[in-house]
Image (cartoon, rainbow over all chains, first blue to last red; front, side):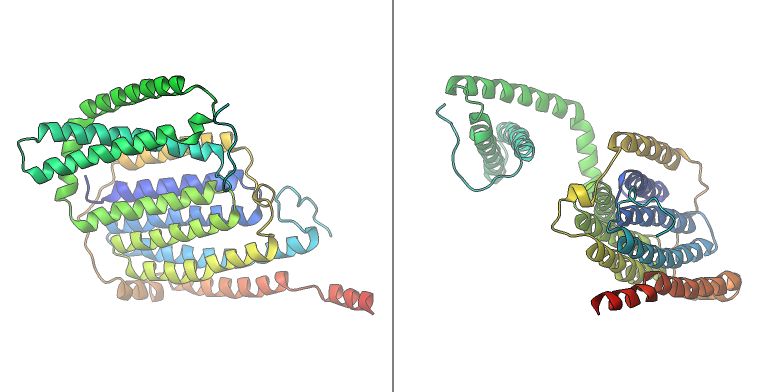
Length: 103
Length: 293
C-alpha cells in the first residue's frame, strides 16, 4: 500500500497529463501553452519508464523516453523561436491576437 | 462602529485572510479537542505524555481563539455579544464535526499510522516526491503569474527526474535534469523575459479562459485515467534495479540505430530552423537603418 508500485506511477502520470491538458486548454499565453505541452510529454514519459520497469523485460521504454526528451528539446527550441518571431510582429503572444498568415 | 477602519500595513486579499482564518480556526479546534481528549485518556500514562497532550490542546485553543478575535469578524460591525455567540456556535459545530470525523476515521487512521510507521523511509520519500510533482503541475496550470508557472514547472520536472530514479532509469533521470531543467526550462524563462513585461498585470499577460469547462474536461480525463491505472490488469513482473546505461547504449546502436540517426538529423534541422526563425529579417534591419539615417 505504501510501497510504490505500477499504479502509483501511472496515477502521477495521469495527473500530470490532466494538468497539462488544463494548461493547454485555458492559457492564452503562447509560452504558457508550451509549458502545458511539456507537462503532457513528461506524463507520457513517466508512463513509458514505469511500464518499462514493471512490465517489460527489454529496455525499449527507456529508449522511447530518451527519444521523447530529445523531441521535446527540439520542439521547445523551434516553438520558442516562433514565439519570439510572433512577438516581433504582433507585440503580443496572446494566442487570440495571432490571426494572420502574412505580415 | 467601534471596530471602524484601522490604518495599518497593506493587507493580503480578504479571501486569503478569511481562508487562513477558517483553516486556523478548524485546525486549532481539532488540535484542542485531540490534545485535551488524549490528555484525559492518558492521565495514567507517564507525565511527559500527559503534559505534551495538554500543551497541544492549549496551543490549539490559543490558535482558535486568536483566529476568532482577529479583525475579519470584527469588521462585520456586530456587537461583541453577537460575535461571541456566533463564535461559540461555530466552535461547537466544528468540534462536533471533528469528533464525528475522528470517530468514523479513527480505526482507519490507526491502520494508516501503523503502515506509515512501518514503511521504509525511501517509500515515504516517494510519496513526498509524487506530491511535489503533482503540486508543481497544478501550479503550472493554475498560477496567475506566468513566471510563477515556470518555476512551478521546474518543481515538476525535478520531481519527475526523481521518479525516474525510483523506476531504475538512471540515465533517463540525468538526461531529464540536463535537458529539461538545464535546457528547455531556461529557454522558456528566456522566452518569458523576452516577450512579457513581468511587472505588468498578470491578468493581461497570462490570462486563463474557459476555466470551468477546462476543469470539467480535465477532471473527467483524470478520473478515467486514474481508474484505468488502478483497475487495469497489467501483467507486472518483479521489478529489478539494474544499471541501464550499457543496455541503453546497446539498444541505441543496435535495434534503434535508424531512429537514433534520424533524431540527430532532426536536431540539426531544429537548430537551423530555430536560428532562421528567430533572427531579425535582413530587410527589417536595412529599413531600420534607412529610417535612422
